[in-house]
Length: 159
Image (cartoon, rainbow, N blue to C red; front, side, top):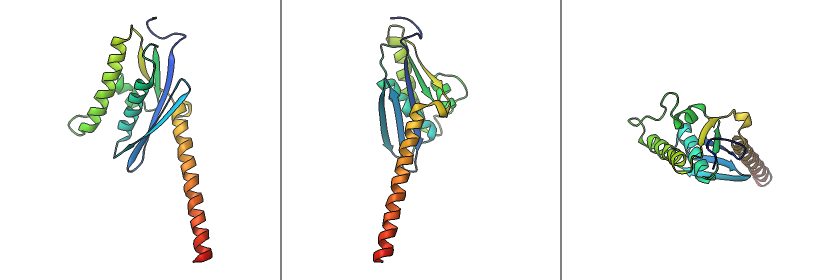
């Protein structure tokens, strides 16, 4: 197994989005698209971190892997660069999510025949997982508008 990144490097895209009562993540790896929802309140950093965790879980551990995420602060924190955004005293949930994700990345780096794994920032416009989430949100918005329009038509007809 080659050390570092090369021609057989696996590229994974991940992203997260937050709603008032749930978070949603998307991961695209090897042509597979995974979208999951998480009930509860999360910060955007937490839901982005969960998307990276899922990307690590779904990626092939026998290949060097680059995981792209469009939240620069989260990507840097997972790689231990930049200022800390996960503060243990103010939010234990954040620290737990961060530590679990960081542990997976460290294990991946240490236990897989020298295969590298890295989390890197990518612009929102180039993040395929982010574009997937946006398309899902758009479809849901269109469906809500249609449902509202039908309801208004029924009410105006039958009062």
